[in-house]
Length: 97
Image 1 (tube, rainbow, N blue to C red):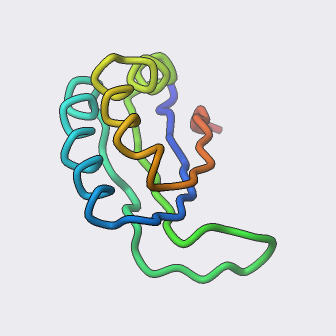
Image 2: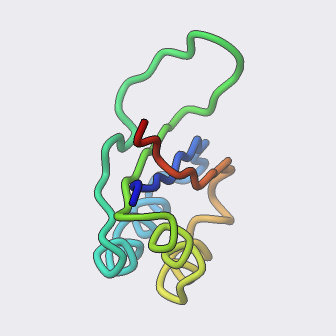
């Protein structure tokens, strides 16, 4: 079964409140087996447009990645993030080819 990934591009307007979101999302990510592969490190946009922060999170499978997003724990964390950031997020299944 292929792994799945959250790929997010985020602009943060208030880093202090965003830090509270990062602390709050830890419970959901632990529950669904998430592992950060990229967490806002330096980046260079080579084509097209991007946001200031890129995050890639690996999950055991597509079901876990989707369930995590819809979980009450993550939705509570997201409620902290939403007023202080703009994000584009996709959940994508990995390739096993």
